[in-house]
Amino acid sequence: MQTPQFQGTHLFDRLCWAKENLDGVQSDYRVVYEDSVDECAKILVPDPNWMACALQGGILPPVWVYHELAKDEAQPDFKKHTRGYLLHQTEPVEAMTEEQAIEYLILKDCPQNVVETWDTGNKTKMVICRKEQLPQTREWRNAWRISDELNLAA
Amino acid sequence: MALGKIKADTLEHSTAGSVDTQYVVNGSAKSWVNFNGSGTVAIRDSYNVSSLADSDVGIYTLSWSNSFANDDYSSAGASGQNSNAMVTVSCAIDTTAPTTSASLYNTNYENGSGGRFDSNQVTIQVLGDLA
Image 1 (cartoon, rainbow over the protein chains, first blue to last red):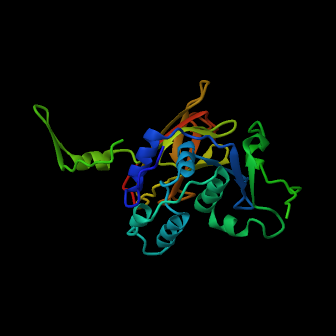
Image 2: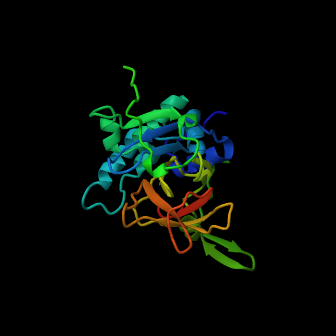
Image 3: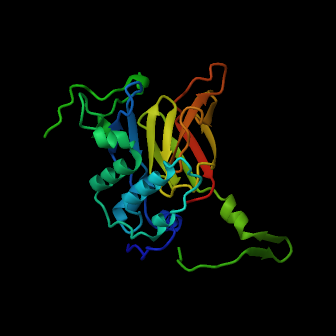
């Protein structure tokens, strides 16, 4: 199915179109990350309808738009977004592969301190895996950690 | 879905009266989700959600595709489990403040202990102004 020309269409309306026309895509990928030494590992789960939008193309804004909005929100005098038009007016991104979609999602939804330092320091702070590689039960969920023995190929 | 637009400030019924369309715009949920918060956490269905972070026992963070205009939006939730456990959904605004792009939710036992709990049926709706 061809995505309509959506540039300038409110993102919420684009999501409406996607909900009505695209089947959700359950990804097997998960992103495991640690953003605090005092907390257990967190698992990022892609939304199936969002993933359908990413694979379809022409719906989602570029990820830098979210970063611009985050900069605005970080200002001490922030009350409300005044540049929301970036979500709606910026040309949508083309169709992504599932792997590219996961990279986009990491840049969008993982904490920036993790994204920027995941492979620095003594321990890996982020790993992309398949859901089958996660513990099969939630026993000791509050103690889950990324393994220190994880071997990162160069 | 047709991409045409009907622009109107009021909808009027022949006998039942009228309603301003701003009620519909402002009063509709801007995001909703139904997910399994136990086992391998997964989203069953949703609208305007980009991801769900499984952060700990009974702690989840929702991120939105279309950010909210401010962090003054309103969330409501319901949760359950295939047992006699009653589970509530709460927003942990005291420890992790909501942002315009994401919010953290807890699911807790609705009994004396009140401890956090992984529920297999969690539903959340969010109302507010979109960016």
